[in-house]
Image 1: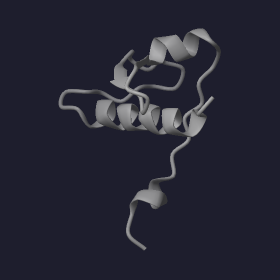
Image 2 (image 1 turned 180 degrees about the horizontal axis):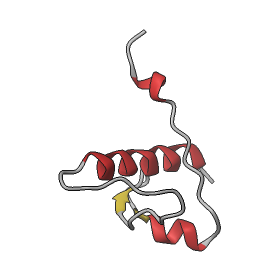
Image 3 (image 1 turned 45 degrees about the vertical axis):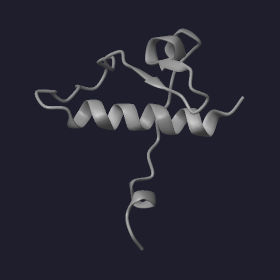
Image 4 (image 1 turned 120 degrees about the vertical axis):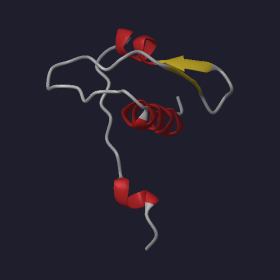
Length: 68
């Protein structure tokens, strides 16, 4: 299972949702809105499909996307 590319896809989706116009911040304990993106293998990936298998932990490396 290729988790890292899938994790990048999920993180990118959450960033997109967070930056979307009209989106409001979630409070602690609230569920993230469901979304679907195309994975690196070309197949759709939905957050609800991932959470159905168990908890999803998203960890970002913000500094990894900034010039050094």
